[in-house]
Image 1: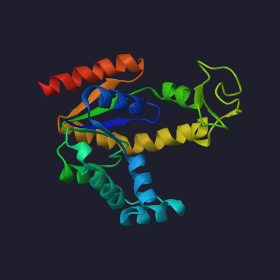
Image 2: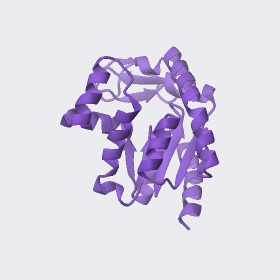
Image 3: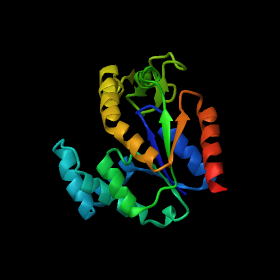
Length: 209
């Protein structure tokens, strides 16, 4: 089964992708990981992507598509995969359609207020990078190594608001695009991870029949 996960930053895409992978044996593909892998392996496409990243420029769609296309050729994708973080734009979605036929697109919906609380409440350890959340951990030092906790730039409220704005601008057309193809399924991501996954399993179960 070929699945795409849509959802704002902090919606819980990564958690659901991991659970789907564990439950059904599908490969979880994070485009960020695929990028880093190509750059680390110094592939031709990785070298081109690295050049854009180092200059602080947006990597063009055709480069992103090539990296995803290359990743999908790996043997671990034959049984099925979950794409997390791609596509982000209509041109990317059209390009993906030329590579594979998707079975479903899961749109994890969460109110902006919940996303802001989830992300801006994160704290990272300056020593070992362990992540905590102020809702469940009130200390200012890490339980594992004693390092001081801090707020990463990506987790600051103003950064989160900016990321949400960008996401909403880019993704609204994508939702319509997949809705018109009758493969979009909404999932309420404001619930617990376990409850959200129950809905995900319900959708996948119906599609596999």
